[in-house]
Image (tube, rainbow, N blue to C red; front, side):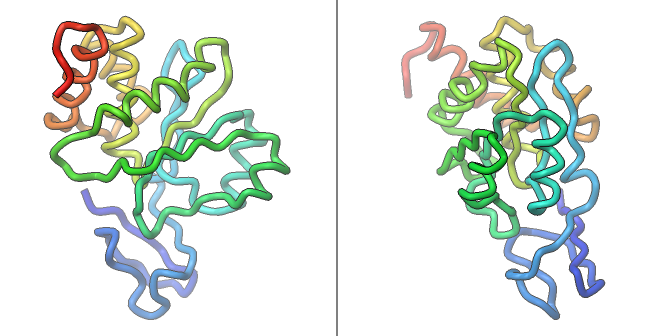
Length: 193
């Protein structure tokens, strides 16, 4: 799904990630459409879902709203803004970057589900945590789907919880299959590939 971006110069373009403002290039900060940076809460948990953080102001706003942990699975998307170490330290928040989770449209790796499950462990004690990827449409919701399944949600209730937080997200069958494979390996009903 392409994402609309507005550049500071007033130009608008649509991603894929390798496309940037034709006047300013990829180094200039841009604002993606509201779908990307809207934040939704998973009912009954302290987990929030979003696209990337957008900029320092958005990061500061999210910290001020009570987000304590930021879990980044945005991979190498060139338009993703990430806080610098000083911003994280001064905010008192914790930032967890899980590298190597690229949006292949084919598969999500088991290590990504393991890492997200570990990063979300504190949410079971009420720690407010934001899980995000580049657009918040595939990687983060599907990784969270797998974690919710590991917490005992059935298929339907896990996806319904995702849709409450991000109503415009559609299930992506290859990533749902990745989540179910990871769950089977985790539960010992399938051997690791």
